[in-house]
Image (cartoon, rainbow, N blue to C red; front, side, top):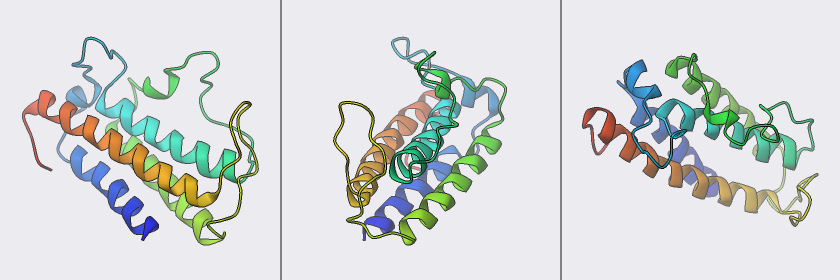
Length: 152
């Protein structure tokens, strides 16, 4: 059931981006959130999947853009086409699905950032449902502000 909910959330990301122009994908309409773009949000979701499933759970070396230098680096993708970002996100989701399928949900992650508790794969999947759903709400608003589309 957890995997089903997460997959539904993941699939909805592309659906909400269907038909968005490159110009609109890069537009940041919220004055208080200048990094919040459709393209940036998709990029962020890709790296969140990677960070939780590969880096934290498996303990793989972190090859994501360095947030230590710039906390918004994953959101800055001005020259990357939205279709490429969506494809990279979906590829990462495939990898995440493979990791979940190969492990027990009660298995603990290999690494947690300093000051954070080690959590189970079940917790990670639940968190990814929440994280993805939260950002789908952002996509709803960004899409409506971009071109008036609602309800996708």
